[in-house]
Image (cartoon, rainbow, N blue to C red):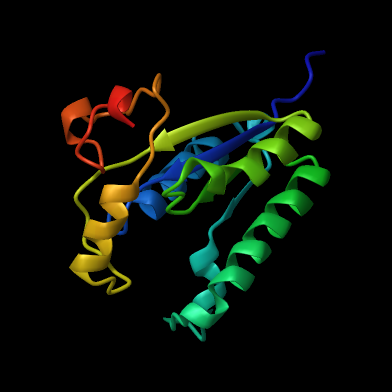
Length: 164
């Protein structure tokens, strides 16, 4: 019998790019579309989950580092519990922001998939446009990264991967 798959999916993008929407669709495929005996154990985490209180989003930048640490800790617990598919959807503007997840995944035998989304959804968290533009300018892409559904000239930072 083959070993069950263990995959960590890191979904990246600017606010309003559809990270959460894509994460939910991705997990929906693995938890609903397969036959009952083929369903995989899945989990989804993002730092923004920390800021929901009683169903309302209440962002406070003072707690961002705590939210990010909690997100990583939740992903680690899920990996140690041998979840099949773990999806983390955060901005991950700089490549180094993903490294703790990648190192953990490698240490625990998970394959890592990185997905960049640039869908034009509404920014539901009220991030000011000037902040998003600053994030766009600093968004890093690996030189060999293929971005699903995005023309390289329209990457979040406006550069082709080779220019980063």
